[in-house]
Image: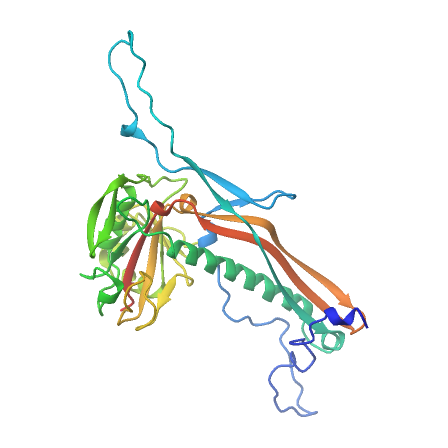
Length: 352
């Protein structure tokens, strides 16, 4: 009896749970069952393909991502001429820092009765494993999207993400029908991502900041990535400048949501980008938009965000003998954090 108190008896999978929808059959009219499960739409994972991934060794609790906040460049004091009696000018090395990631344990479970396993046409345990794998992958991809979408906004003395808006809007509250994504917006976002001058919103107006930012470079091994939603894909597909092969950079292979490149930027359609319905909570923290909108993200992705695995997902199957059940359990531990906020540009646009 002492063992049973640890068993969660709710939501267990019985034979009736997996028997499917009923239908009428007759003895003289044989029924043929398909040999495979026809899956619901499976998501592919896009954000995690472009971020920095690290692994926490066993025996450790935290992982510190070491970073240089910015190169000093012109802030280094350079002397000219031959040194005689005076010392060479000294510059303080103040740009080295780090971000701490503490992986959190995440678990999930299906419990299936032995009777349900024996009397079902499908391998119920195998299908439960598939559900857990799909579920944890989608959870992590969505968490990366949320972390990048919640990056610290730039300010006069804060290295952060600058927000651009569709149409003439200067905030999410100003978005109106037709303020959709454009190739000009993509080019503008790339300009700010590449620039060492930091800009921020002051009263809605883009203003030059006192502090500098990192001038990120779009490189073949670590390119800029633009994450958009399905509505923005439709808009860009109708834009002749985007689909033109010369502007597009050639017809590239569609892989992991990538629909090609524009101005050397990978364009990826991701279902997990932040989308807000009209009158929902505005991503920029201001008043609610009056139209359905999406927060697209342009990023130097591997520099912007890091996923730290404390334990990669594992799935174990164990019998619960006193209840004649099979327990399918997923366990993992991870942390996700933005490392360089200034490696992100928000592009907030109306969906239509």
